[in-house]
Image (cartoon, rainbow, N blue to C red):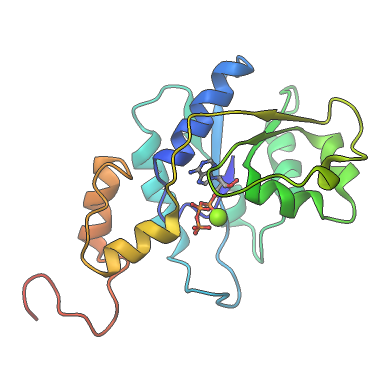
Length: 199
Ligand code: ATP
Ligand code: MG
């Protein structure tokens, strides 16, 4: 399961857990994206912070792990590179790529999407607020993609960052250890905001 994980939240964890159960997966590997060259609509937190939050969030589940392939590769992250690196590390594994409805639409608009389906089976999970357009799914090869309905959690990392920046709670949206990590590293506090100690 790829993602920016800035921060990782319970929507990610439920998606991973549901798909693992549905397809009897041995392991779910969370793959935080590399550091983008340019800031897009917002400044993405350092890769090491996103990696550590993902490790903290997944530590208690023996079937969850975190991979550094995208963080350690230079340049922007493309799913095709992620899958090729994972395939090289696990040559005998049957790979599944787990993605939410919004991210799936972006992946399916890739011009060489068939290359992706050679590397992994794709699983799209439902996400509140995002409908999958039927025309995205029209001419896919049979069996390349499964859509899975999961318990709806209307949580996004964007909302978690906004809340943290405004000093509002992120408790219960992200795992407890991630709440503490965000606060310890002051991750989403605007540069001009007073620190909790008043400085
Ligand atoms: P941001 O708001 O920064 O885009 P995000 O919440 O969308 O963050 P990402 O790291 O972008 O999180 O998402 C990683 C993957 O998890 C994507 O495939 C995304 O569609 C999926 N995902 C994220 N949140 C949910 C959710 N609440 N339910 C289902 N899937 C989700
Ligand atoms: Mg997203």
